[in-house]
Image (tube, rainbow, N blue to C red; front, side):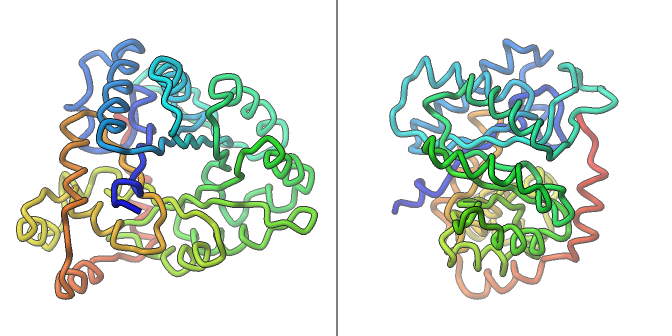
Length: 312
């Protein structure tokens, strides 16, 4: 497998006018109208496809991300893209950057059925993976057998079932989700979790998932832009040694994990994408890997800081 085959594009920061990623605002079109954000999404997807990226990840809560992606797929008609999306959050931001609430979470059978109909209506024929959005260890999904059975039916339609995780207890969630079975078959085929050089707490659980046959996707590998805009001095130093920017260094660290099948990029412009892709040329030595391994912080502190990021 070529290194580029392990990269995917995530649309969290492109499908809606506001998001928590730092370093994003200056790369977006002024005004951030629906039409402008659609054009920006298509431009990034075009550049990513030209570079060889063949995985794209969306969600019902990413504003109009699925709509933008569907338009691009129907226009460009690629026959080799893997499309994943997610259900469980609803976008309620009304295309406002200053909305009081941007998304609402609900893991229920009714929400699953309604959002799957919406995703399938837009992405029918392209949807490969459908994931529970931000599953946590205390989610009602773990007790809802009807919901589990409904999700298991996706396999008959050729759609893999997955889940994403967030929060300081990602490892607990991953292990609990891996134990779910419906009619003797493991329910989940993929897991998408936050991993970056600051937040490594899920690493052992993700390695276990990979070894068990689940496809592992990594998200937020730039810590919502913090590792690109304001990285620790050690990241700047090692990036300079490798003649790349800090964002590429952070992405390369994720790619250095052999158990990570897909590493998602959250670029919102061709310039960000080009900088990110420099990660493919980074080769770490043992000292650099050791230094980076010492940068992880307690997950409770990491997630508290993430929760404080403003939507802009």
